[in-house]
Image (cartoon, rainbow over all chains, first blue to last red; front, side, top):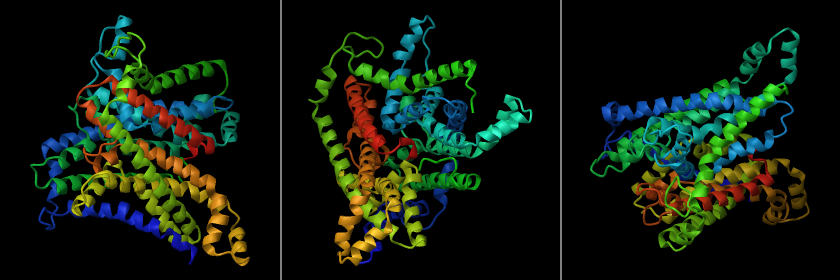
Length: 274
Length: 262
């Protein structure tokens, strides 16, 4: 028996449980419940009750990406600094929450931000009064940032770490001040990491499920929650088809992001995590 | 990149402290509340283990715990076998064919969890397979396999290819050569892959949510359902235990590889 045959169970399993299910999504997305071809499922997007959710998802995912970049870049920059002895352990500490169940992380966030939670107790103790944040877009944004920040830090850190320090020294020798070194040398050289990080944050943020529902007391749905909601609409005979068309759109959006990523960062220098 | 002068160092210290506070405050608060005697979320009224005792007397939670572990163990064993054999097979293939097969593994890793979950659910429903424990296990195997594959592949590349050939030349049966020569060489990779697969299985919420039913809930499902009924301290205790378990597993994985290389 040739050794290559050992890959048969692998090929079959992945075909049956990774490829075929996606074909089912495509099939349902383009058919009516009777099995006839249609593109009407995609027109559901334009309905006001759905369009609002989709726009909110895109908006919050963009905000989340921006906040992660603003927090993540300096973090990665500090971590990649020369002679920073604690960098290794800090990187592990930053990555650690990422491996913790998404639900548990969000649940923890919920506890912290609650009207009667620790944050408000602390604010009151400081005499700053209470703030109402749970249930608002602010809380959802915080939850998203909390969940996806590590995805921004890691690729930028990897790129900065690999950067040739002599290039910076050359710029300095040629009379560049530190600010110009940063804007003209460091940032341009870290673009692959930034693109990687932006994609890695934006993709899961825009498809996130449960985070928003939990942090907004069920008031604010995002695209991921919308898919769940549609599939559970037992009164709607089209629910599988419409749900599939939404899922397919989501998948296409992700594939476009990945294509974009490959184009900007073809050798995945950004050290993409997967 | 950063010059090590005093200003930079102090800014860095403040920045990192705030970041760690942001990342760990929610988790630490949750852990603290799991030991809090009062149900209140802001008042500390004394240390107690009551919530943990309650947890282990709740049949629903114990059932979910059993389901979670059962699913994780079965999925890990099967995905480790399939993934390891897959890696060995692909290693022996020509590069073109192997590349196609490896790319299939990127599919579940890049597809959003919600789409993976929904797609599997559609397939099960179409084939009239009732959602339950086994549908969840099948799904877990599919997303665990790539982790095993990507842990074993590098070990195979490091291996001296002549060893296997030598074993065959010396009259070893191919199957015997597999477990006498190849497997011992790649055992560290297999073990890391299995640990990762187990962690991913324990950790999963979204895919399990769509491929199982309320009849066979796993722990994530119980946590999710309970959030709709208001927060209970037993859930903090459960979360703390789950966090501790994942932490221990990751320390084990990290000892074998470096987390950031994954």
